Image 1 (cartoon, each protein chain N blue to C red):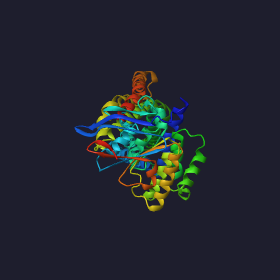
Image 2 (cartoon, chains in turn blue, red; image 1 turned 90 degrees about the vertical axis):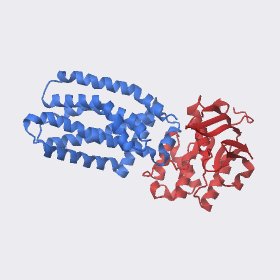
Image 3 (spheres, one colour; image 1 turned 45 degrees about the horizontal axis):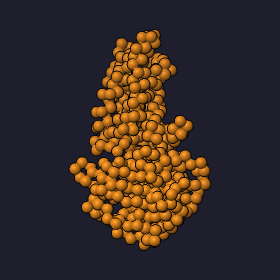
Image 4 (cartoon, rainbow over the protein chains, first blue to last red; image 1 turned 180 degrees about the vertical axis):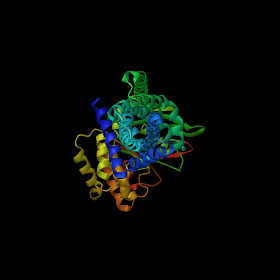
Length: 224
Length: 218
């Protein structure tokens, strides 16, 4: 168990070190996110009637598309110079690679979400319950990352990887996104948390399923 | 305790096809300690596939690879710990420095004295002054040297080398041969694929030719 945790930390630390050096993921996703919010801001007249419908959608559409870029990129890093092969034939367990990658994606997405929440607050002059929205989105982002890591390892080996990942991944992750939009919308409308409990339970069930089958799928895909 | 007469690696009738294309047919050989096994063959003859099977990266369709008499499928963790691999690709992160790459792999293999091991191998491979250079700034030859340091950092018992001499200058080749000779003398065994003669390793070596999907002893 100790070695798995150490290996997860090694993969995570290495991913951040690579990102600090290259800034490839963060800069591109940041620009993409700002543009998205800006375009939506021009597209909709942010009146109070529609703002509570539109903002959760903008938030989660942005997280979804940014997530696809992040997931693709983090796995591509391992495909350069035969790194994935080096990891797979090392004594590191495949579960460690899976968890390391999933946690790295989760952390990137949390950072992007924080930036998005700040941008949405500024652009739409919202009084967002920032802490509640942030906390409630954590299980959604975690589930999103687990599914994304499984599908990224499938798509990254194909020639049409940029197309294949969203095509395979988005239909599977759509329940999480729908739940996340509903929960965020309820929070914006100041509805009690009990109104969102069913959605939240659904996300947790989804997370649990991928928490269990994610590493197995990753192992199966990377074997031979 | 290892029986000195027992082969370190025993390859037993392995076959491998990709789709309809048969790559390896009934390949059997054994590798003893203190021995270099040189496999020659034309491009596309299946040398790299054979090394991939030995490295446990891919499985044969049939047949078995035994490490110290144990089926490679049954003791993957320990077998992988005992292998050092240098592929066509250097298996290094471009944006990390030489030191960071070696630290990463030392930690992957749970080495306790990371600092000493890195110091030892960078001195031996004469790459000390490039320790803080990122890999993408290094020439092909130096990448290969760093790749060899990566393959050796966890003190493996077996080295699997896929055309290791490609792109190396005379100086790098000398260092490479001296390290290989030392490795073999200290009870290691090496399996390498090449197009060259490797006269420097002749006294330790057994030679095979991979032709028409079959392995021929030379």
